[in-house]
Image (cartoon, rainbow over all chains, first blue to last red; front, top):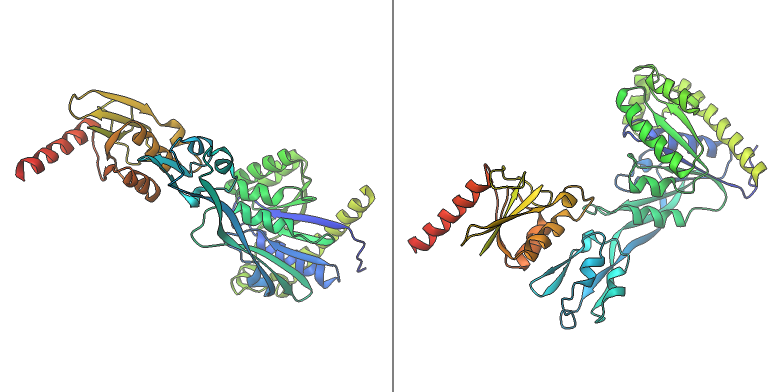
Length: 295
Length: 113
């Protein structure tokens, strides 16, 4: 039953290991929820290499620049006291030859140098890191961050993106791989984490890291085992030990990979895959019912 | 004049460390007297980012005017360049040998001109 009760359920899709099927699951789930008439927003947080648009084909209506304030040093005022260099956690400043040299690409924009400069020699100038783009893809709201090629700092782009999440409906956040800062930024404050994994030793190793991260963040979790018949039983046994429910196991199927390679949602071509996604939809709708009862 | 050589260990018999910012040690050698000291760079080895700039700051603060290493990244190079430090790359073998080779080439240059 389509409903809009003003409840927001934010579900992050993450994996630890790259290439397990995060994006395929995230876009498939978002699309199936929208087909059911749910209000749903797909958010591509993998800002270094967003690819959800390949499957969902959005039209963008709004673009916003993401900037960080970086120091600009007035050499005439600078006395080379070095306090700004000392305070910089990211080594974006160096004291050389009686002056201060700034490396903007290392600057996280904390403003510490400006605060400690006794001469008022530092002013902050904006530096563009990337963009936030927002639009629609059929019945879906579509949002993504995109880091400018050559930039290394994706966290501020994800932070800006997350400040703009809608306040109701399902919000599906497609996480970057790994367990470092960009992933933490994506997972912070979500209502549930869906871990997409694969039954290989590599999948297990990175799954353990992802579960450890999620436990630290205090997140509720469940798992999808992709290509469930392809490897060994290590992942299954680990999830049982950890008490993490497996919401879906997807059999290895060349047809899924072929659809993916053409940028087509596998559910459109593989009936078994569509059924699996249906069961995921049921789980997240049940999750919303739980969220409603808590509030 | 002081030289900074990147090394995998804390003495001149160690191999040259091929990386500048993430070198294990910096050996600061006085070219006139041969006196030297070892500077631990384990904080640079483990730094998430900014290792090159920090390493450049370390050798600049120690008064080195030449760096001998395997390779040096763009940010470290520009910091060293701004301080007028000359960077010699592609060094390998023992640190003592790399220092000697540099001193010999300098002598040849001076003698030949």
